[in-house]
Amino acid sequence: MSSRPSAWPSATPPQANAKPITVTQPHLPPLEEFLPYLEQIWASKILTNGGPFLRQLEAALAAFLGVPYVCLFANATVALVTALQALRIGGEVITTPYSFVATAHSLLWNGIKPVFVDIDPDTYNLDPDKIEAAITPHTTAIMPVHCYGRPCDTEAIQRIADNYNLKVIYDAAHAFGVQRQGQSVLNAGDLSILSFHATKVFNTFEGGAIVCRDLRTKQHIDHLKNFGFVNEVTVVAAGINGKMSEFNAALGLLQLQHMPAVLERRAQIDAIYRERLAAIDSIETPTWPEQDRVNWSYFPIRVKPHCALSRDALYETLKQQGISGRRYFYPLISEFPMYRGLPSAQTALLPHATQASREVICLPQYPGLSDADVHRVCDVLAMAAAPAKVLPLAA
Ligand SMILES: *Cc1c(COP(=O)(O)O)cnc(C)c1O
Image 1: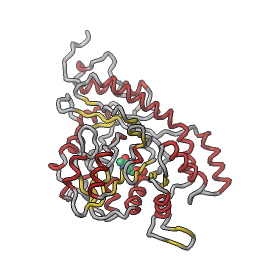
Image 2: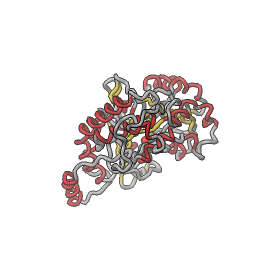
Image 3: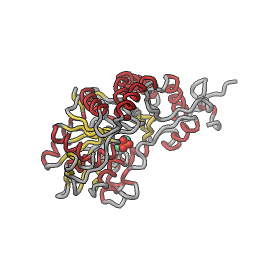
């Protein structure tokens, strides 16, 4: 940028030597608040296998989220794999290419063929109008993703699922606390999977969960995540080890107390970004649906074709200024080697997902970000993305 000093729109150019701003940073409660939990674990010597903290967290999360049952897991990927097992899904599953690879990987781990369907360019979610054309006699389920925490069109997806007798498993890794018309979006479909990975809105270091509607399903899932054990001598299925430890569950209980403040800070950051970036017409900011309650988990901007810099150039400019954005989701899942040979992976069939993956940058968004940090990100964007109008150099 030093070659174009006259393009700075403001008097104070962002400083290249300022402290780096990461794209995300896990929220951690004060350590001293966690120590009493550790003391309890050390005293009880119960480390895992459905211990007291795990049971407490399952109940606390069900209440906080407004869902019937929660089955805690070691991470969301093993939860996705297990959810497909629990519903005995096989054949083909319709899913989105615009997600984190684990969504489709969970299908391959079950010997299921992913069928990619394009997204709605305004929501980044699976376009319900394109689902029916992808259904074949082998289709058994739909696996949508509430991308960036924006709820899918759950009613339209359910109508299709009902018509064709398909299961719906939501990868809800981004959708912690998200509500649609006053209801948890996690109650849509047959099962929803949450991630509590370090980078997510609610973290337990590593962790995940399946949300389900009835106790029988919960019990079945709980058996599957514990090798298939029902009791000491009975194994009902070739289950896996997907259990969450007491350490992670204890942290989750403490993190949950901080969630209202975490969400409030995320909303503030989102509002600053939207206000500041509204002035840059070559950058499109997310417009969250008013009737829904989102969780401000990501701040995806779209770098429009008429922007002074390409998406990748803008991404690099941010990096040079010590600000890391993320090209979520680039490449598309359908572009990775284990998927690109599939008939549904052709770029021509996925124009909106392809374009989004070339235009989106997720900006830093986490509760530890200061207002000044957010403004610095906006300053760099304003400087770099504005059309190159040459301002007179100060004498
Ligand atoms: C983070 C994420 C996952 C994987 O979660 P882990 O807990 O890390 O296994 C799956 N799907 C999506 C959409 C994600 O963002």
